[in-house]
Image (tube, rainbow, N blue to C red; front, top):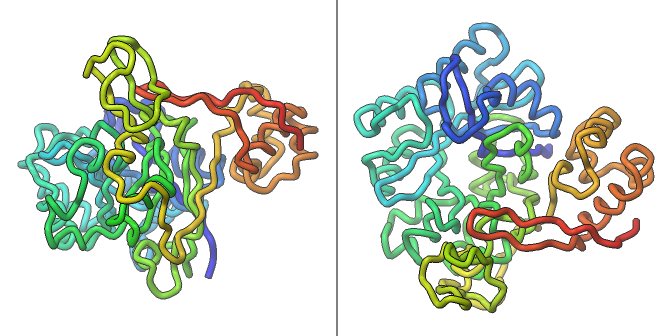
Length: 392
């Protein structure tokens, strides 16, 4: 068995010279993700979740024709540099939630596109509101041989728990058993999710949902698999045949932009005991409910109950978001070390101090120990790391 770093939720901003994900950077292309961003960050596997767009699938087919990609036995697409591309499609259902379906090959991509063609207004754009239900997508996933994963499940915008239901079984019935994987999202972690009984048997993913190169790999997973292909990924996410997620790496939930409830009128992020459903200051209901508050509202236990074998969740912060890491320091670190993940996980602190300075080394030391000082985010505003006094 081998171990691979994977970020399975990355968006393409542009393909074939046209916009794909409207809110993503136009510089974020399939080629750039595979050949620049993934190696820079240290990713072995990337999931690009816009292949419902024919623009993106045409781009992939062009890379296949040019020898920059090849289809892998077992599914998936291997870049010439060894990075595995897992094709995915993020879809907005009629319930207003986001679901990702990961697909094994070109044929399954075309089958999914054919299904969506009459159910979305503009197939060229990604993550379009589709005239399909979540139950429809569960059935579609079986037909295309995919892996289904509800995205950023706790967020107030488009998360299955955040904006639709407090219990999957209430709305999906027996079909809820078809969901074996969920994505936590930037404002949640394993401890929060394992306060909810029905999630405890599921595999958790921590992915970046990147809309720009700088955010690729801001959350990632360490996977234990025999090799890099789609079927190995399926076994891993389904916890079969000795494959599994070894660890989740993600931002402290307080750094997420929907962590706490936010009052639109007062422009205030709640600091009171959760759950906060209305503004404690003005008493108004014009609030964006925070992920932490939503979990407190729907949880089955006040403390997490982790199932046997639940992977650890390690808090990480992208280098660019650490105080003291400006563009020049970031460039020096990238040049001096094999990848950003090597800096975050393995690089000796003494060496980091030589390259980036003692302040940066101290911040990375505090991050590895889970001792960063953080100001919580909410209402669409990210939290921030506050400069501390830790010493390596």
